Image 1 (tube, rainbow, N blue to C red):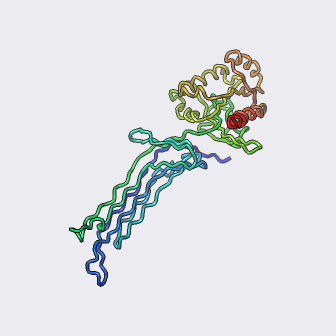
Image 2 (cartoon, rainbow, N blue to C red):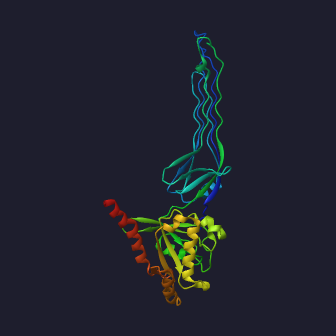
Image 3 (cartoon, one colour):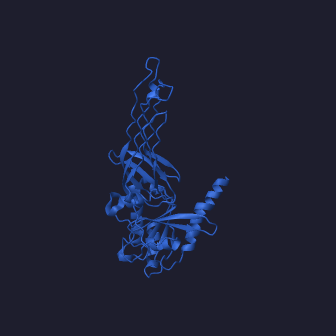
Length: 340
């Protein structure tokens, strides 16, 4: 299996194109000794444009090409010929990219819809030629204006994944195995913590061609909201998930307490962003094929008061009810609301 590197934060250096200078020129043709000024205007410099593309899922291409430069415009020419405009530079970004100024930290914008564009460095304006300075008192002007210099900036690009469903859990809870069972994604899977170190997106498909994007967020640990274990980097990908699946290791691997795990996860999300407490969710009791799971699930329900769906991601059992639940939540409920 080919492993694809994921980049969710990149520094980008952008420079637009300079505007072209206006031209000083005079019409000189046979039998027209005093043809007057005919200097053309300079062209407009190209701009650097960030475009949202649904086919992109990582900032990796811009990690390898961090310098994005638009073309300079041509200068004006004689015979009232205007200079050619500089070509724009268009960089494609994934949905959910947030752009900030690297020097000031100011928010520049964010791209949330396919095809949405943001001009981050505007091309310089073209100068004007001497034809514009002709007057009754100045028949042979030599004045012109230069094109303006272009903008140049350093930006931070930060990707916050936009997913329908986000998988949340502690390391080794079985999120990657679950993702591979629900979708066509092929995350690295192994029986030790922190196998997933980058978010992975998979697509869950239904027979009627409806689809849901499912994101496997790297395992969180206590203190994630304070940045422990790269917590800030991981938690930001949960912010835009429309629904959360809490994947709980009900077998209590490594002497973990499933109920405490769930309560800690809920608290970490709340401390990171208060609004996450209102995101709809479902609790999945994973590893129910293991011997200690049945004992732990009774204690879990008593301590948390939560309803749970019992599954075994490893064995692939109990997943159909989960898929049906998500289908009803996203498609049937939405259809009823639209009809009303």
